[in-house]
Length: 437
Image (cartoon, rainbow, N blue to C red):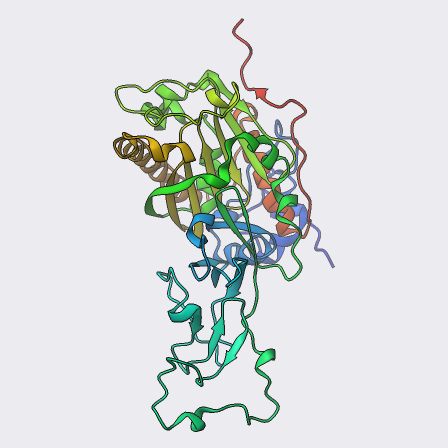
């Protein structure tokens, strides 16, 4: 039975919930009524959503185990036996390709006594394309089939002792019943996705119109070239919300603001589990660097060839696609106040023939590192402030923060048990400022 949201839990001056909120209310619609208002009237998501360990634990289950989460790159599992080990909602997952090249996902645990099978650094499943448990040597094929216990080539069973380890005589045991526990996996473009739901909807439902919007970029042919990791003392949603708006650019990003002018921003989002904006035209580099360097993809149409696309893929992936390169942030929530970011630079297929590619990548990597460190510093300051019980939420700035409102309501939907995909703008691009003409 739903508990009524009483005025006793409301700050009379702001009509926002008092802190801390009873964790039992994190799944109640009434707790979010101020954020459910139209954006021009709405207040931000509950501060507890960024600071409460109880909210974080519930969010891991409600948000991260119920939909598709971007975890890596299709290029990392480009052949049979190649693998990545990723983590979603505290669960370790193996993603690989079987002997026929089919994409496979498994919980990273042995069916015998749950030993973790592969370390996070694994890039190949193992010798002879098999996944072997380091504890008792149970062995699995890349399609998840349990091949059995040690009676295999290279099983390290001492010569003459094979019969001791023969489980074929075990009562009530059929190795066909003990294959690896499967996880849904899929790809779109260069991204790799995992879904922990037992009966997942297609990835296309969550992506909405993004495949159509990015159709001319040939994203499935792009290649990861540079990677960095950042340990951020902030909630993953603060990272996302910072990415979704450009209100902060003049004060936080003096370098970026020179090549991503305030007046050149548009909202760029249709139906789908994402928020989107774009800048057009793409500005030339300043003395502090910028997005120029690598040659642009020659097959893009006029609009794509002069625009930068910025998309936050729900729940935790930042995707930037420019005519000449892409930049991705994979954000893994570790705690309510800690996120591990993997930042990746990618190049399009024509860059392989660019003699200056390495030097241009050096410049781009340096520029994005400056921008990202500025973002890390500011979101960590927000985290410090949001943990102060005196803060009970703030008002949205409607012109710049509609994508935040869209994202926060996606989170609320999952927290209260709603499964729906938001609609998009009627216009392909919604100008955020009046036309100067």
